[in-house]
Image (tube, rainbow, N blue to C red):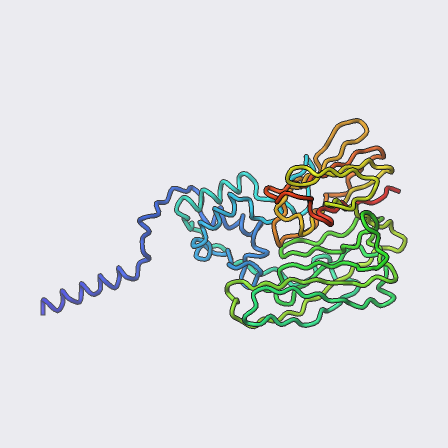
Length: 387
């Protein structure tokens, strides 16, 4: 009987020990920061639009249990400045929705992932997926794209759709937004106007939207609009890419475009293309080691509103500088676009450039084969003539 009681007591001890969470003896806690109190607020602010259940990122980062296994990946991505994927710098001027993590946030995240990833005491609230409403409010016109099926053996596909515009929709536009049907599948979208009469080098902007997950649409300022020629076609190029969670599944999507009209008679947004070849004659182009430099003098008072790279500029370091007639040069923007994250960088309000200012753009690749620079546009600067 005594032996039976002893066996029962040993069994109870073993069950209790098994019920306790395992101790990570190889991960000493050295971080003063915890997930609940310090890390989660940063992830909510910087990452939750994509890294959430059902989102386009391959893993959610909404709880400590979800985040801890990815600690080393987070460290490497932060050190390489790959995340957030569209951060940029400007010479004292704010860029809309292009903020990277701050120095303090970087310190918190790196200290936490290398210091034992303590969860903290406070039970954090669950992070909900972003709402499906339109960020700019109800569009003036919605256009639903055809349904797309991505087969089980396909990981990434791109589809192009040409959409009919009714006569009433051929008006200047202040914004175009994209609402994915399946958030975890739609990775990027380009919405533009295609016209046989579209000028090369400089003219009215034809790129209406460069959509990537987590980006926030920005409408044009009052007094400006994207011109819609009578003969132009509206084209949407959508890239679908599965995350590893769905890589062997058949997936479908039916996304929607939202068009927002500007007032008739608004000043068209201009596009100055910085390319490897075929720049307009008013510019100077220099082929330098690893890239190109282009410059021009402004012949009219101008307002700058945005800058964006093309896919051909992925991986290059891009700088845009302006020098007013008084000679005080200012860095407008500096960034390195990542492959697959082509988006528009909006200035926080138009930047006034007086007539006679000098605009210089540099596109430098870290490694580029010898020979002529890439043919076609690399960077586009969007401007508006000042009334």
